Length: 201
Figure 1 (cartoon, rainbow, N blue to C red):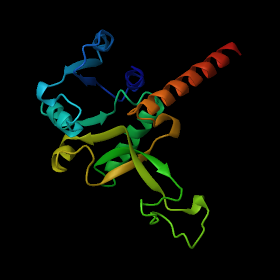
Figure 2: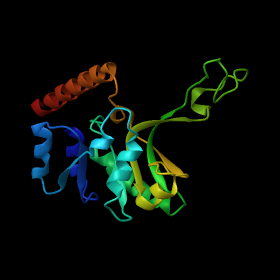
Figure 3: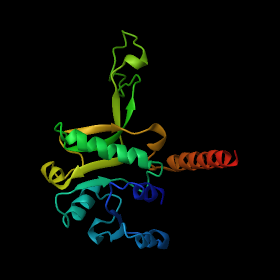
Figure 4: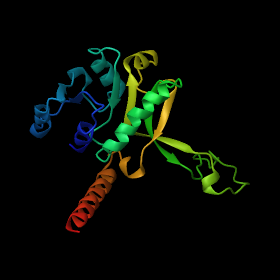
């Protein structure tokens, strides 16, 4: 699992807990690493319609007020450098009153609602895209929060005052659809090809 490899390269992370209902032997064998543990998912929390916040609440019930990082197996390209940077930024941001961190995609482009109402620009003033107000999309790659911020914010991994942390574009893929999977395969193959080329030089 690529994301586990990235997390293992972050000394700032003391323990990696994999919450799963899978019986995949390869996945379950990851707990051979002393830094990794497998948490078998509560039967009442199995299903596609179960909110991730319920899974977090179940996990936090056995923990004190620590800092937690949440990511997914479907975020394979998130790099250790980015995770380390997010942890550092979260520590700094809490000093300025932020209570959580959420990974986002940052856009400077012309956005519209479905009825073609502009979101972040005035169509009568044609600004360069570089001068437009930024729009941010939650990309599900990374969340950082504490147990107290989760409890105080209606059992939500995103607090009332989250810091928006823009992740690099090519690390931000969250695999939700077959199209996402196809793109991830293409990108992974390209990465392998590039690494092989560098190894030959």
